[in-house]
Length: 173
Image (cartoon, rainbow, N blue to C red; front, side, top):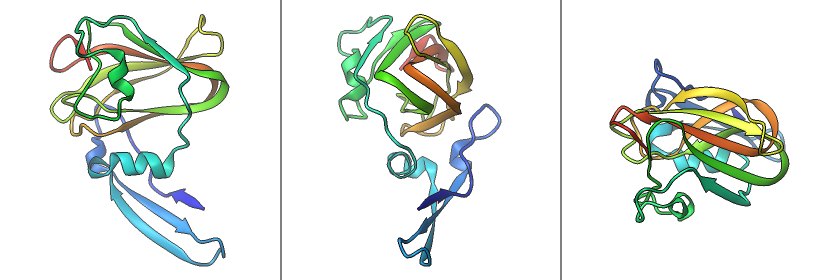
């Protein structure tokens, strides 16, 4: 059993790097307990793997790819040194889960996320036509590792990132 005792916080007022996470692991016997403190900014990928049920993305598309080297395929290549680059406000990246599932957040890593804040909305849809905004967010500005943007559980097949640029200018990376 895995229990997160202190939640993750997002927004302009709280930096995730200042929010350590206390994890309680209970053994199969129900008796043995281990506590671990994970500083998010140092172990974002580990936190993602431990605390979240990752859903498979069946397909995805973006509103633009102005830089050939920084195309949409870079989002899932496993290399944190590559990126997707989209310019201007309301840049879109839509992720298709293949069927309707319970969704309560998304993990994103931002290029130069350790020195920039990125501003975004998240939207969900069951049909790919009618989207519901589930939150407005700002990245922490302190890490290039995964950041987690959560919202109340929604039934969705599609999750859409709507980029509103960054503190570094008109880019959504």
